[in-house]
Image (cartoon, rainbow, N blue to C red):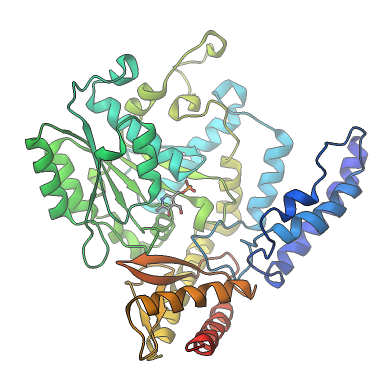
Length: 474
Ligand code: PLP
């Protein structure tokens, strides 16, 4: 494709992109295709001869678009969001045009230095400790893996990287609550610590990590000869956005020399608001911390902010220096390739820069605050209906509830809520997902999509009520 052809297609594409942004709410939110439908619509053999971009776009519209679930629809209330914003998409265009691979400072000093500055900005914006240093990782899962590997190496005197297992049968132990995201279990498996050495402490009534349970688990483990290595606390659990008590957990970690990692994948963005700074009470105990601007801070996927007070240990865990990566600037600059698993690194800092500058901290705060406010309003609407109930505390922008008509109980209630969830999602009018709260099938409504408004939430709530009541005793 010649530059002139590129220019023509790019202009057309920008028209398409702007149109999509205006109309994202008009598509069926959850893709309605059947398994295999898209695969079988694509030729089995790749084209031998070049094809026009027009043809590609035709197929994009007719084959691909029906298989898209519209995460950017304001009627997307599922999972946690993967929000984008115009500012982020524009930056992504620059990122892919430059095609920078910022593995080391020399392969694009601007990529490294903008990333350093953005991490500093985020640190200030969220109120994280001054001494933290930051790096952008691709996902919370990778970042948590990096934290657990660092904790493992630190406790083992950096010898597991060298020798393989050096714990003489005295297994390392990692602790989390029974509400912690599955990425922790995955990291423990990959780190060679072993799934059996992940201790999931029973959560408290509000679904937060129980410090007493942690204390007991650690004492018991020590008496059996295990070596406590890392505690993972969560700000905003995936199921219900429970907030773990950092100070109490941190004091226990401090007493035993255990690495404290905090996963704030979603709720970290709420730290932009001074009224949520209580979540970081005890921050002086945190060794590493992550949150995903690609969830709720309007930076399109992927962009995880990872911070640690012990960058030296992180780097020592990942550092490797083949001949071809030796540079004259080594030691004088930051080579981010040593800060995590991948060598190659996208220029993600540009998305953060674009989003933070175009919204301003104030604009981001207003948006996040509004999302929290409409969640609270939704909670009020639910509480006003006697045949619905709130299932977990509403802390940020996630409301957990269920339909509970008189005359039904136990598994019958679970079944009807599951049916309600599928019926709503099949309608294409909104998309909700569920969680299980102590055996209760619970609907989760996340009011945090970039363009969601109170009107979208009210309309969705009306549909939920009428659908529930129409399917109740069918
Ligand atoms: N941690 C929490 C609390 C999450 O909710 C999620 C995903 O929703 C993750 C980690 C994993 O995020 P990622 O997709 O960035 O790996």
